[in-house]
Length: 565
Image 1 (cartoon, rainbow, N blue to C red):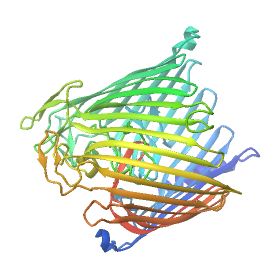
Image 2 (image 1 turned 90 degrees about the horizontal axis):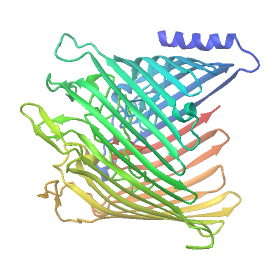
Image 3 (image 1 turned 60 degrees about the horizontal axis):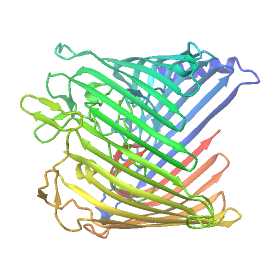
Image 4 (image 1 turned 90 degrees about the vertical axis):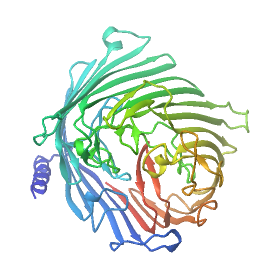
């Protein structure tokens, strides 16, 4: 009730000062599903077959002030795969009042923010992933000089419709050296960040009530060359597994990311190296390791090629920053990187008179090379070393425009992944799978807004029905092997308003040889879009921007409605 009264008060005060230059904006989004029994994939619909996630956002701007409120409803339950804390909940989820001037930007209420690349701190909303980790408190952003800006935050993090036990405070500073020193040939910027979490230790004096994270970064652009380096450290903290403190021993953490690239017209090369050691950080220490990304404070995306197709999204990498010292699972973090190469051929050249574009990516991620003493809860990790391989991917993509109406995309991927990444559970014990994936996409414009798109794809499991090996090279059981897949997508747009599609991913090499089919359509008009579909959802990881969540296998009818105003 207090949230509702406060939100109404914010909007009412804004309206009370209404002038001709004030305006409303916002949106409504509804994602719902009716789950159905499906013996083919052994799915039994729950008692609450209908589930829906609904969001209503209202904002009002008047001059330098903006007020906003977001109402959310998860009735009778949230969609499958979302955190249970949302089930059967509805109400005012967030609100804010913001003042933005030329040199000063102040927000009270809920806000989103990012320090540097996000390795130390980032809050954001992604409704597809079920993430909204906004901070409730106050944020002040100040442009001290044209070269120097400062951001300070204080508050508690959103956790469903409640807030975290931990209290966060942080400062982020950025300084443009090139501007200050009047350097014209190079663009050079430096930055520093600090974030602290205070949380009651409930009488346990052996663990810290304050955990601090801090770091620095440098970004530069020199002609066609650009790069960045960021290094961070975390003070001592306990490690938690499934909501329980493992021991009273304390462990610090570190992270580093280096980016380097070259770009010119028609050509680009860039590479990224990242090392994470004990680098998960939550607003509540007991939230460590939760699979729903609730109360997460930093942003750790999978730095790999972001794929667009049914079968290329089966084996995707989920980052592994955690420290675990257990008899059944030992890991200290991850190390790896990726390299991207882009090239556009000139017209009247390769594959026709229109420009052909190619993109090549190689990525490799491994666990830190570390020695563990489970009995004493001790470990020691090398900076790089030769840790267990978690993920290796090589892919290339060729885009060609054959005419003004016809385009094709050819994709090939060679991927190896630890089964524990895909299916959850300990790493290095379930074996690895090695697959080749080929995709051919074609789209044709028929005129008058009509278009046709078709995709055919195939995933070949290199091991077939043979045994797989674990990270030590030992043969293991293959009962979890998914085998070969074939997939197809057909899409037809009648105009800019109506479209229909059919898709199928056939696991013909797996147990049951099941089809994961889907069919539906959409209506788009102005600021409104309605989508309807029926089909099966393959269980596993769903990733957006390199951040992932697990979804269970299910069948049902889904609807999506988005209205903006």
